Amino acid sequence: MRRVCKSDSRQLLTWRNDSKVRKFSRQTEIITDEEHEIWFVGKLQSLQSDCEIFIFSESDFLVGMSRIDMAQPGCAEISILIDPGFRGRGYGTRILGQTISHALDEKGLGELEAIIHRNNLASVALFKKFKFVRNYSAGDFDNYALVREGN
Image (tube, rainbow, N blue to C red; front, side, top):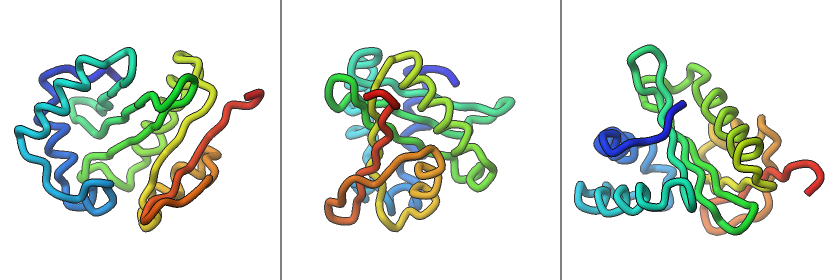
């Protein structure tokens, strides 16, 4: 687990434009290089305060990423993405577990949210495995939350 850097931009765009990722994304269209660069530069400028992006690797291979976006004080939206060549190998569990630990233990957040397309059964099962509970639905997406005990 390491923080994203400028040289990761192309990899993030490649992962984001994968057809399976787009199928379950809030924005299903292909993202252009220009759109991605504007988004990525903005995220790099907000790192540490409003957003954190992490890259995960195994040996010399990049296997996925996670992102923590502050939604409100004490609460953040968490998302993960696994490289298509590494799906179904348990990386989602490792990536989500490390990201949750960072958000709760190191950042001291009290609540995490995930917005998941209701047909993305693998993601639904993964977040439920970590005790996320569905709060409400909005269109094709369900909001799941994990609240730290004592909050």
